[in-house]
Amino acid sequence: MSDVLALARPELRKLKPYVPGDYEPGTLRMNTNESPWRAPGDTTERGLNRYPPPRPTALNERLGEYYGVAPNELLVTRGSSEAIDVLIRGFCTADRDSISICPPTFDMYRVYADIQGAGIVRVPLRRNDDLAADFALDVDGIMASIEAGVKLIFLCTPNNPTGTTASAADIETICSAAEGSAIVVVDEAYREFSSEKDCRELRQRFNHVVLLRTLSKYVSLAGVRCGALIGDPALVEFLGTVLPPYTFPTPSIELVQQAMQGDSIGVANERIAIIRSERARLTETLLGIDGIDRVWPSQANFVFVRVKPRFDLVDRARRAGILVRVFANDTTLNDCVRISIGTPEHNDRLISALTQPEASP
Image (cartoon, rainbow, N blue to C red):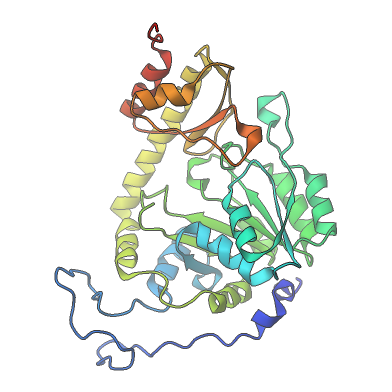
C-alpha cells in the first residue's frame, strides 16, 4: 500500500496538536479552568460545566462496532459535513490543490473547497434516456481528473440529490486508478436506505479510500449532528490533529449512546422499512401525475422528480403547507425537485396537493 499521508499538506504533517488538560475519573479537575458548579437544570451524566472528552472515545467504540471497523479507523465528526471540511483542509493547500466532484451532487463539497481556496474539477454525471443508467459516473472523466493531479475525489452513493447509486465496478476502477495519487471519499450518508452493498470491502483493500457515514437520517438524530469518517488509522490520526479537541458536545454524546442501543436500533430499522415502502408507493403515484415528467429510481430517503413545463409542483406543495427542495445554485436542475419521504400521512397530503384540480382564476 502507498503512504496515504504523502498526499497530505506537508506543513500539517509537522503540526503539533493541542494537548488538552488531563482527565481521570475520580479526580478533582482544577486544570482546565471550568466552572466548579453545574448550570441550573443540567441533568447530563457528565455535567455541562465540564468539557466533553477531547474525542468521544465511547462513541468511537460503539460506532466502530456498528460499522464493523476498529475504533482507530473512525473519527467522530459533527455530521458528515465536518468530515468533508477536515479532509479538504488536511489535504488541499489553498490556490494549489484541487478536488473532483460529480454534479449534480451534494453542494457542500464545493462550499468547503471554496472556503479553503481549493480548486474544483467538475466531472458531471453521465445522462442517459434509460432511467436505470441515468446519472452514472463518468469514469473516464474522473480518471482524467486523477491524471490532472486532484487530491480528493468525492463520490456520493446513494447520490444527493438524485437518489441513484454508483456502480460498484466503477467505484472499484476509480479506487484502483487513484492509489498513490488521490484520496477517494465515498459519501454513504444514505446507505441504510439502500439495498446495494456498501463500500467497506474497498476500504479494507485500499488505504486511500475514506467512507463517510451519518446518524442524521438513520436514527433520527439530524439535530444532534453525529457523523463518522472511516479510514486508515494513520489518516484518522492525522485528521484528528487538524480537528480541534472538545468538538463533540456532552448532550450529543449521551443522546447518541442512547440511540445506538438495541431497542432504538430496532425502531430505526422498522422505520427504514416504512420509508422504503413509502418510497416505492410515492414513486409509482408521482409517475401517474400528468405534470410530472420523470421520477428517478431512488436508494435514499427521498425521490428526485423532473416536472413538465407549466406544472408548478413547488407552488402547489407550498399552498398545502409542504416544502420541497429546489436547487437555486444549479441551473441544470431548474425543472427538478427533491422530495423527502414522509410518513404515509405526509405523503398522502402531498399527493392530494399535486392531484387536486387547480382553482379557476
